Length: 220
Image 1 (spheres, one colour):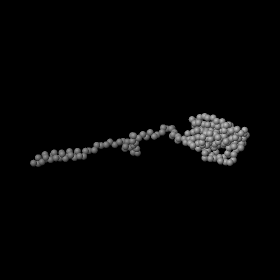
Image 2 (cartoon, one colour):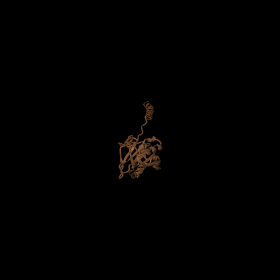
Image 3 (tube, rainbow, N blue to C red):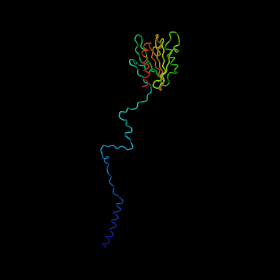
Image 4 (tube, rainbow, N blue to C red):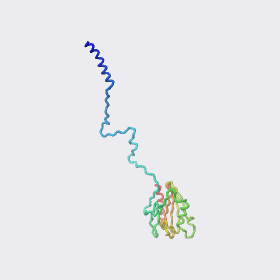
């Protein structure tokens, strides 16, 4: 009987051990990553390109888009604080030997709206000088056109007796013989710019090359 009981007990013990092994399988060991174990290391996802936003060494950042023209005064011309807001640039040009006054440069800009038709500006310039023989200054106004930096430039030249206002809105006017005006309208993408150089003829003639250079400085 003891022998029979022992035989019956053997399969029962084996079945219990087999059931225990299927219900709780042994966990497989996971190999630790040597990179993950390194202290202080930051992992970056492979889908992110760190170099995609990097700028090559020595490359300058892009310039901001321009919103207006810039002018470089010729050497010797003296920049002044603009008398009115419409004047973007105002400068004094030292007088030539024998002249009694300096010449004045002004650059007017009113944005895209401008200051009316081109003919209106030509008329305003013509009214600043009269002719000793009584002829029309508008008819004496010499005009020429050229391209500077891809922009149309209309240039004007007129001599005569200056009767322009001494200051914007001032009742005082010049009354000076043998003065000269150089004018230019730059048709830019920011609106037209109106340049005027006014003063004694000899001083303006001496500064004519600088006036042209001032126009050309906008192309840089």
